[in-house]
Amino acid sequence: MNLSQRQQRILEVVRKEGFVSIESLAQLFAVTAQTIRSDVNQLSGMSLLRRYHGGVGLSSSVENESYDSRQIKSLNEKRRIAATLVKHIPAQASLFINIGTTTEEIAKALLNHRDLRIITNNLNVARILSANPSFEVIIAGGVVRSRDQGITGEATVDFIDQFKVDFGIVGISGIDNDGTLLDFDYREVRVAKAIIQNSRAVFMAADWTKFGRNAMVRLGHVSQIDAFFTDRRPDKEMCRILREADVTLHIPDED
Image (cartoon, rainbow, N blue to C red):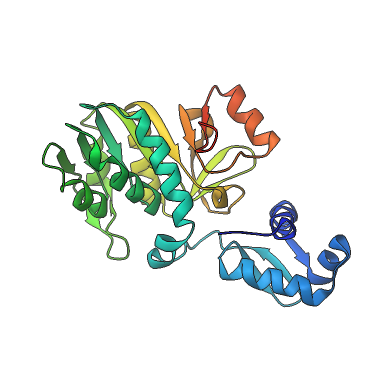
């Protein structure tokens, strides 16, 4: 996903203001309204922003994109993140892996490891990792969501609480400007919280589109994780928050 410098700035402005008119953006960037509409249409098509009559606002905070759309969105970025993260997973480690298309790419990148023990509430992750005969893959119980093969519910949380593992690998739908971790489904959030609480080290994986993205359910704060794997360096304020929380930042080209 390649955005122009102006499109990246439009994204930053809208995430800061919440809603901005086309006319205001045209004046801010000294271009025509037609040029801004073209940029906005592209950003809207990527589900990064939402087009409204006369302006542009934030994408929905109550409904995530479809699973099929998320599978292909930022795919190269997710693969780069995955390749970086798995370098920090040793052989014979125990892992939690939660729901998400980024964690599914991490599962694929783990296939060359040996003797891992993985507990997951993601049937796609379980299917991917079961191809390695040296792995022991344990599936959490609960209700299976047909849209993405994720497993959630009280039984899932109770199951996760039975374990204490070396690494918890979690994806996230949104990261607010103050470092709050956000998601769309409170049932999924409860499982992610259990994973964080029962992991000796927590690795979070999220591509750049998650920064400033709206989602209505609070999972926690970046200070609760040990390492953050992303594809681009966050802005100065987020870097400050991560540094003060003693969170190690990993970026593929800089790692």
